[in-house]
Length: 217
Image (cartoon, rainbow, N blue to C red; front, side, top):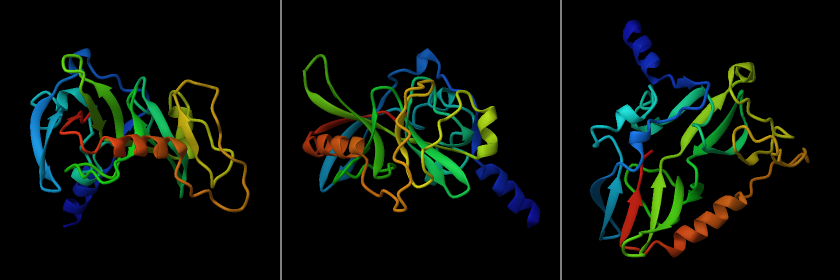
């Protein structure tokens, strides 16, 4: 039994990504069509996910180490190349951040429930070239964490918030001009970050669209 428990724990341990991951160029814009029912309406998705035979080859090793409930969790880790880190801050004994690909923002999906996605996703509004139809693209956020002792091994090294109770709203890895958050005031700031509010409003206005593009990157 102890051997089985050890093997399970090892399988669930997040993989390390101490340098920015760069997916192969062939992995860009690979979609398959799927659909699900939301509020009695059928929503069609163009998704790049595990049903695509090329999906796993486009991900770093260990992307699914935690099972479906915690896929895309890496530690110690930095965001993939060209991505943006959101909500950098201390979480107990470690620091955490969420990563979205270039052009996407960490967002609240409001009333829309997409099977396989949490409430927080990386979202981007775009327009189809052929029909000029406005659509929404979303992908799973990547959750990264690291201990202070891991920082020397991370490239680029993440910035540290000005206070243990504050969070850095956004950071593009390698950018030295970063808002380190508010100094300590004794009261944690639990407000919803402005980028989430703005993106949430944009998503709310687009809930009624019949077609949603979903890229599980």
